[in-house]
Image (cartoon, rainbow, N blue to C red; front, side, top):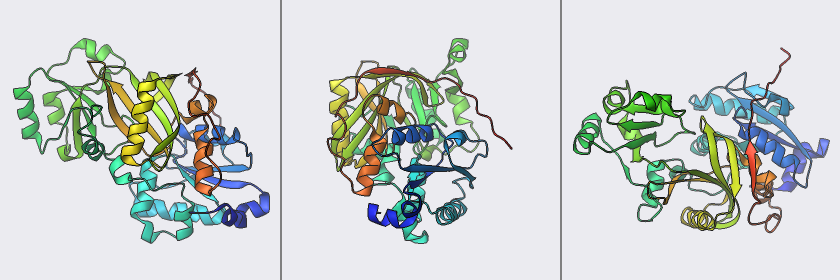
Length: 357
């Protein structure tokens, strides 16, 4: 782990400011991280960002922005990050996607050690947490695990629905970001389904089976959870929950909260503490629950990183980003912020950005 002393030998010795490179800075989480650190006790940060999209948002928050190869070109992507790191005297690399963390972990032997040491990550079971099937297998005997199934192929998938004609399943890739590739599978669809705001991912059984190139082994099929969705930002120390912010996701677009209400909920706080203990969460994580038809809380996923709406936790009094940086640098992080956040509502609107080409 990179200590604060080592860091001062890099950028801080020149500008007295810490240079932070935000990976996947085109996502909503980038502005949230920047806003959170600007509201921390220390104001000594300079932010740089990179993304595969040259028109990525958040450029106005960054001192410098770099276009890098897509993550699927892993070696090229890593080389690009290494180049940015050394040429710009970066002190910390802050990943905004779990994919960024796993790529560097998988290629740790091929990456310069100083780059690995500067990546803000902790000793979490990333291989389990980023895979929804492995996550559910870990909690399959708990009351908050949703019912789930896996199918080897198209034939076993269709056979299941022939026997369970009234069943509705929610299909999602075992490893994915947000709601990409998710489908609500029904026996039959109606025009009312497509008039709904979420109707774009509703699909009939036959249509799903005919999707070209679909690999059933890469999907997990869960019970349909029609209830309210909750997102809990947590800060945990080796499995012990220290701080949390519970949000009711009132309105979601493309997997991102557009209206979120911070609430106090003892049941969700206890469940979050149990999740942190089971997975030995160290540092920050985002835990998502949804209510079943019976009104029971069921786990959707655990993201071993700060969420795209982490700025809400900061506004609610718990600056999890500041806590992450403090813990990573070996600074004091316990009892800095309240254990629970205060109640408030966040509304996210569209904002225009202008670039001088």
